[in-house]
Image 1 (cartoon, rainbow, N blue to C red):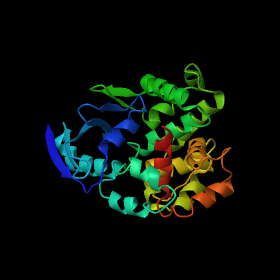
Image 2 (cartoon, rainbow, N blue to C red; image 1 turned 90 degrees about the vertical axis):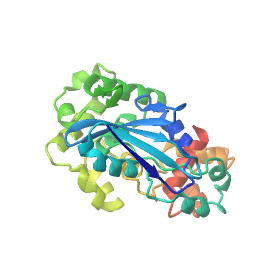
Image 3 (cartoon, rainbow, N blue to C red; image 1 turned 45 degrees about the vertical axis):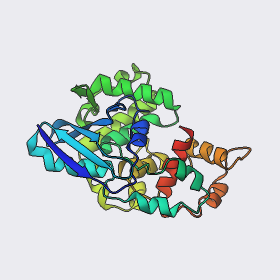
Image 4 (tube, rainbow, N blue to C red; image 1 turned 180 degrees about the vertical axis):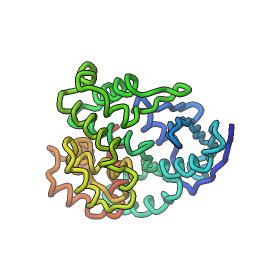
Length: 288
């Protein structure tokens, strides 16, 4: 068993992090104890890393813990990446102070962009969530993970690509997947397991290169590619205009009679760059 204490530059609102992670029933969080247990696959082994807030929003401090001393440094680096601890939220706070989102950013001050725990998990989740309401999307994802994944100390790990590549369409259909979505999940996993799609190489590519690469894969469109960039890779200037939640949030915030057009979204978002991803996150938070 190992433990490590990490200090982070504030503001960093961990309660907001837990609130958003709690929306996914597969995430293992404890609001009262301010703990998130993170499933990390390292060296082909499943490791659960505890992340406990022991500081405040203005003076954030976290206690990390795990069982395997051999992966301690790798685990700490991954947790820093996932929770975006090396990026100062002060920059974002200052940027949005005089924008048309100032009110939302004041309300959710210090809410960071927390990433999905790994890229494969993020991609599978994005594909499953395509064109579904949030509640059923989470239900479907939970069925998928609990049928084919594994739990360690009560923390669920998504199945690995090699596992999903070898399941049948009928197995997913039995979980209420559509025919096409089942095919997309299996075919994409097969590409990854066979090495034709190396997710680890995406970190070195530009947004445009990643989108161009991913949309060639059957079942992955611009919405899924952009969400992978935002939630998987943590790119800071993404604005998925086709996202219904973003459209609803903008409609609500700007008191519009109907959902905004693409041109209207461009108009309202002029001052948000280079932190469009944070605008996206805070708009989501404003209606969640």
